[in-house]
Every structure is written in structure tokens, then in C-alpha cells.
Image 1: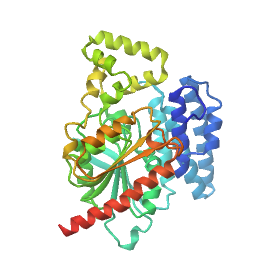
Image 2: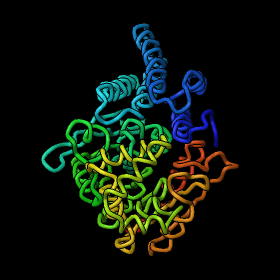
Image 3: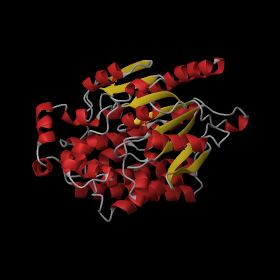
Image 4: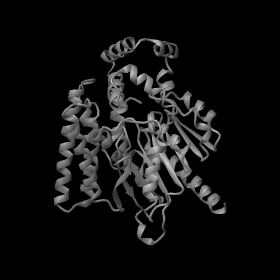
Length: 408
């Protein structure tokens, strides 16, 4: 689905920003007016124009807040968050503008939370000698005494922020259905990566476990039978956790991402196998050549080195091979919903069938199509449809799992 740019990287990130209109995180006109000022493939103008839009919308938010217009303030702060996040996206990890732009995106989101009409708590989750940041959202009827709430935990992937998950995972839709929702960032993501240098790890059962431990101290949520949603690379992290963590009652891969190496090698498997046996200098040289001609290749490689904490393309190649669910898929016992898009340019659709074939648990597959406007990665062309599918499935599955638990 093309929105504006010929460069796929720019166009997809434009669609991603626009998608958050569904839950109040953007406006199409603001997005389109911004990208109209950006030169295709020019990351400098990308940063400048998104930053300009973010600052303008931030001023609108401040004016609304000063005037006591709470709903308008909330809406504008949330939109400013998305635009600052989008401005940061293509900056190098060591760019001096990166951290302050990220901080503005988080500041805007939290400013919007001050005007939210449902309860929210900022979390600091104990983890490996430090803490992981997150948010706990509760339904508007939290004061009815109907506790604990069935709980959905959402986690991101290769480049997402906890704040973004509020829009991408449709937290308002989950709250409207009576779920409590936790969104958080782990190693290789958001603040842990930016502030503490915590890089990604493949064994995310050791990340999700502490989150569930922390929730066990909160009487408002049910930490013993949670629904888990993993977005993008989280489509690896979430089922990996489900393979080892029996407190997970149901798991959604949004989208499927069961083997990073096979995904990266899918279009050229013979070349990929040759590169596995090639000297590091050859792998690094070919990656450098690709980066010269492809913005997407350049961004993906640089972000991978940052997220995984490695120095070269050859090390990235070796790291990707450690991110496979194949050895543990048989351990997953809870129901799994596998989402896939027929136009997904990150994860080939054919790999969804490979993942499903490995699973022995109750499994549901939903393939989103171009015709539905939802065929891209994480269905960012139609979040209303995607989140409807997710929470309809949770409505049915979580009830069934709760009844099974009660009768056991």
C-alpha cells in the first residue's frame, strides 16, 4: 500500500504514523502535510519536517491545556508524541538529536495521560538489577469492585516504544472491553536501550517473567492468566515467553516472527547460505555496499547493530540465527493467534505456515489482505480491523481458559 514515497522505508513509516489516527495518535492531514515537505530518501528533511510538525502540535496542546480544554489537550499531546517519535526514527544511534527527540516523544505521551479519562499508572518493573518502564491502564469502571481484571500484556519489537503500543495495540479498544492492559519496554527497546545500553536477548521468558511477578502484587489485575501480545519482533518474543511461562493463558503474534534468520534469508536462500560460510570481511563489505544503495538496508543494519549490541554485519548475521522458535515451539501449550499480512515486506507470508506447522497448541491463523487495507506489516493500514480480530479472539479464548482453570 503506497501512501506517498517511492522509498519503501519512508512510505511504510508514513503509513505507520497515519495508522495511529484510529486511536487518537495522529491525523491524516497533519501526516500528509508533513510528508509533502520531505524529499524522498532524505533523512535530514525527514527529521526536520516531522520535528516542525511535532512542535506545532505541541503548542496546540499547551494552549488547550492552559484553556482547560482537557480533551483537546490530550488529543494534541498524543499526536505530538507520534510526530516526535517519527522524527527520531531514522536518526543514527549516536546522533546527538536522538535522545532529546525521544525524550520529547515520551514527555508528550505522558502529558496526554494527565488528561486520560481512564486510570493509568506508570510502572518501574524490577529486572536484573535495574527496572523496566511500562504503563498499567485500567478500564473506566475500575471503581466498581469487579477485580481483578483480566489482563493483556503488550510488548514491542525491533524499534517500537512502550508509548507507541498504546495506539498500535489498540489499548482504548481493550479498555472498552473491560481488560486491564500493561505495555512495557524490555532490553533492546526504548528507554532501556537508550539510557542503560540494555541490548536485546533471545530468551524473553526471562523478561516477561519479571513483568508478571510485578503484576502479582497488584490486586487490580489477574497475573495468573494473562493474554500476551507481541508486536513485530515481539512476534518472536511473546511465543518464546509462552513456551516457558505457564501464567500466559493466550498469546498473539502480531505479526508472526518465528525465525529471524530465515526471514532475512527468504528471498535469496542460496546467497544467505554462502554468506554464512564467507569471511566476515566479505559479509561486512556486501552489507556496506547494500547500505549505499538502499535506505531500508542501511537503517535495518544500523538499527540491528544498536539493538543487538554488536559492531558488524557479520555479527548481526550470527545473532539472527539465535532468534528461532523452532527448538521450543512444541513447548507452547496456550492458544496462539497468528496474524500475517499478504504484503508484509519484513516477514514473508509463507513463513506463517512454517510456524503454524511447528505448533502443537490450539492455533488460529488470520491472514490480512491488500483488499482489506491491512496487508502490510502489523496491519498498520487498518488497525480497527486488526485490533478487532485480536480482542474478539481474546474475548472468546480468555473466557474459555478461565473456565478451564476454574474447573481444574
